[in-house]
Every structure is written in structure tokens, then in C-alpha cells.
Length: 243
Image (tube, rainbow, N blue to C red; front, side, top):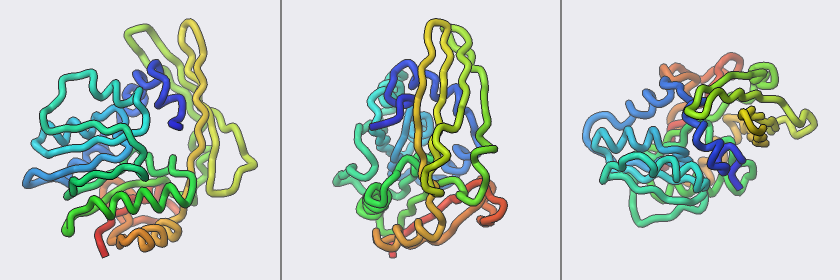
């Protein structure tokens, strides 16, 4: 089941306010420059990136398991060349094939089990055109995310200010998992969303990709395309193609 921040309609409405970064979106949009392409956006959330691809003329399928997020995506005027599908990434199947398959917003990290990771990569392999590429990012497990994530901020909404605070909730889990909670302070109530993310290593992901029939051609450490450095990079951005 999706975390409450994705499944609760009141929190889904806030998602874009707290995720306004553009470096990652610009990076992914640059992957589809040139001729119009078929794009599969796994874990599309509220669909901001999917819609931008479609507005640029690409044919897009946005897939997400959270109906509340897709409801936000469908609320605004829809380009004719976009389709929304409610499904997990590992279960999605279609007759369509894609030039570009993406998984953004660190959605890869909500795949907690080996089964979910492997089957998501198999989804990519089964729907990727022979000359296509799949690209996704996950955070570098070598950094101290407990200290990086001591965060609070306030969002201004039509209903007034909402303060969001993140706190770590479970320090006893296995080293490659991290659990935390977001507390959203509305004027009339506090809503809490509990999350667990997996911090798979680059070696683990390389092995999963190989088992799924994919080859990792590049691992970048930042949105400027620089190479991944285990000691300093915040991101691990993977580009994969068919073997």
C-alpha cells in the first residue's frame, strides 16, 4: 500500500508544494530531446513530469499505485497523448513499447523487497524498445541520511499554512533501510505519514539489472551528469539498456 502522503487525498494535494525541485525534471526531460518518443513514467505521482513530456509532443503513459495521486494528475486539463494507469511498477504490463522508461522522485526506494526490485526492472526490460533506455535514481547509501534529513518547512496552501516536520522513527532496522515519519500540521488536525525506504547499493542494483536482462551503461552522481562517487555523491542515477 502507498504511504499516507500518497494515498490520503488531503496530503496528495500538498505533494507538489513540497517537491518543487527542477534539476531532476530538467535532467529527465533532456533525455527525450529530438524526435517525439514513447515515454513510460513509473511512479508518476501527480503527473507533473508526465504532463510536461506530453506537452512537448511525446506519447506518455503515467503509472502509479496511489489513486489519490492520479486523481490530482487528472484534475487539470489533459493532453490527448497521455494515459494514466493505476498499478504498481512491478505489476504493470502492456502491449505498448517505449523509447524511454523513467522512475523519478526516488520512487525506486519504495521498492523494499528483492521481488519488487527485480520485477520492476523486468517491467522495464519487457516494455523497452530495442534501442530504448531506462533511467532512474536512488540515493547513495554511503551518506548519513539521518542527519541530512533533519528537516521542517511550511507550505502555503489555499486553506492556509501547513507545517511539515520529518522525524526518524526506527534506528534499529537493517543498514540498508531507513524509516521516518512526516507530521503535517493543519489548522484542524495533524496527519502523519510513515515511510520506509530501501537504500540498495550500486552493486546490488547492477546484479538485479543483470537478472532482469538489462545492462547498466552509466551511473551518474548528480543531475549535471557527473560520475558517481561513493564517498560524496548524493544520487545514484542509473541508465540501463537491453543486453
